[in-house]
Picture: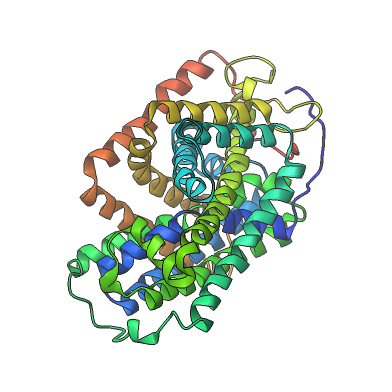
Length: 452
């Protein structure tokens, strides 16, 4: 590969933990609890689902910590899958992540942010229509110019979420708007709740994807200082913080707005805001939502190009300046950022946005995302050097079993989209053959080449 500028590892504990919390605490925290509460109909069941998913997530975080410490390189799941299951499986993940999964998620979040901007500012219709593209381009430009400024802003935004959400809970309590009477009886299900098995299954899927994104810290491990110390704190500390916030916010929501009055997810945000802040409630809650969404988008736009970069470094034939794959292994000579990978991520997100296909893409890739996470954790059983941790093999078995249950739920609930998503993943096989046909594939993954 062409020589890159060595820029060193810049991200400390605060920034790495912000990656974990930033992607997990996004739009879902304001929408998911309402639907879960309405479906489950019981505060005790709501808390139990959150705690059960937190246990599974913490098990996964322990596994990802071990993988990230063993392979502290840019790329995350791609690097781990390549080590555990080989080039083809890793390429399928990298292909899906770079071209389908994350562009669809970025487009969806940018569109989801627009209504909340409109509550805060009198935006004309033409600007509102263009705003998602503006957001995506702005984030792409920040990542193109290197991660020093991006890291600082991303860390500040995502750590700001914690006191803001804690303040919402605190204000609900001290203002008298939250009442324990709305939570009792804790175990009795309210009238109109969904059938129990269906409700628990749907709530578990919602909770899993509300937690989704905690694994993103592995993608930027190549930029973390002292990874053996920093990454365990980021993964486990971040997951515990997210769990505490979700439990507190969910119970505060229900304590302020009784379950019987919850009509829809979007209406619930307005109900909660109005109950706490009166006529200005919509503006206050919209500002909170935007803080969470933009912080999550910043993590996404920074982490995903590192997957493409790692894939390109591993699959290219030694010439990062040429070839369809090696092209994405190039670092900017001044900024040290994976510029072509950033351009690909931004361009694909804009394409998905223009096609209006992000809702369908997200439905297609959910099943595949769960399978890839389970496979990633399963690589711990295929390591040359055995894992010697107090939690092994219980943690990976818990996470894999939980993922299997979620995958089965998804197949039962959304069979056709799940199968179509799997087909999209498998398209990566002929794509890889076309890209690397006739070339000698480099045997090593992206090493310690440091990004900026």
